[in-house]
Picture 1 (cartoon, helix red, strand yellow):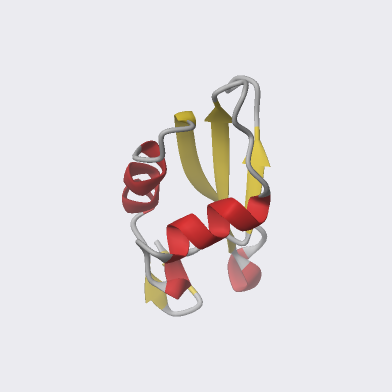
Picture 2 (cartoon, rainbow, N blue to C red):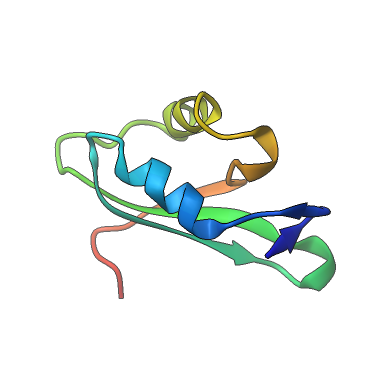
Length: 80
């Protein structure tokens, strides 16, 4: 998929998210219309560990290029 001119594989983001010790399950997707798509990370975390969004952004920025960083992080109890 292309976002802001960059080719992005959502599976790469999901693989990195799954490596975090507090993540039980995670996914990546997009929101918005064709001209304004944004990356979104969906996370199911361990109950005792729900770090702030800044933690997720910092952690991912050490492993992914900036253009692959999600614009939003959604913490879920379970996937629908």
